[in-house]
Amino acid sequence: MANINLAQDNAAQEPRLISKGMAMVLIVFFAIILAYGIVLLLDMRVKSEVVQMKSQYAEAYEKMRRGEASEVADFNNRMNISQKILAEGLNTSEILSAVEKSMIPAVYLDSYSYDADGSSVTLGCVGDNYNTAAKQILNFKNSDFFAGVTAGETELEEETNKINFTIILKLK
Image 1: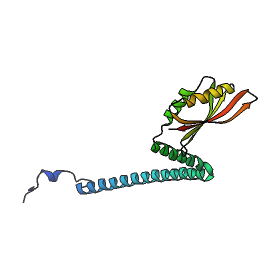
Image 2: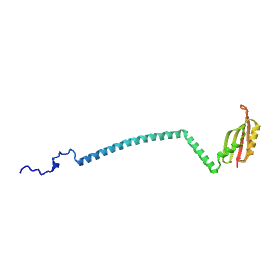
Image 3: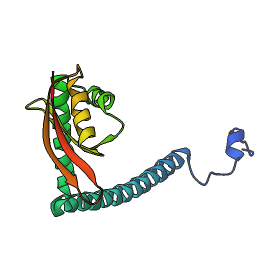
Image 4: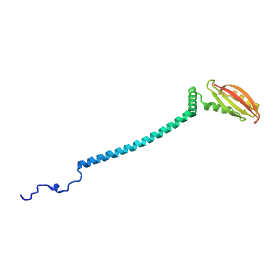
C-alpha cells in the first residue's frame, strides 16, 4: 500500500510538555503551599500578639500587686457612695446651690462634708470677724432649704487674723 494517512489534523501537532491534568495538579499544589505559608505568617503574628498581651497583663497585675489597687478601690468606694446618694434622691448640686445662695460676701468655704446617715452637711467657713460668722449662721437659719442649723467650733487664726468656724446644716 501506498502511503495512506488516516490521521486527522490533530496528529500533526507537537506533543505537549504538560498535560491538562498535570497542570491542574500543579496549580492546586502551589495554592496549597501558598495557603500554608499564609497560615504560618498569621500564626507568627498571633503568637507575637499573645506575648505582647501577656506582658501587658503581667505589668498591670504587678501594678495592682504593688499597691496601686487602692486607686481602684477608691474609685469603687466613690461609685458606691454615688449610687447611695442617687438612690436617696438627694442632688448635690441642689445642696450646693442652696449653700451658695445663703453665703454672704465676707465669708468663704474652706471645706464641705456630707453625712448621708444623718442627712447633714458640715461646712468649714472662714470669715473676717465674729460678726460675719454670726451673720452667716443667721443667713443659713433663714433659708427654707435647711431644717436646722448648728454652729460648731469657732477659732481665730492668728496668721491671717481670720475666723474659722464650722456650721452643721440639717437637710429637710
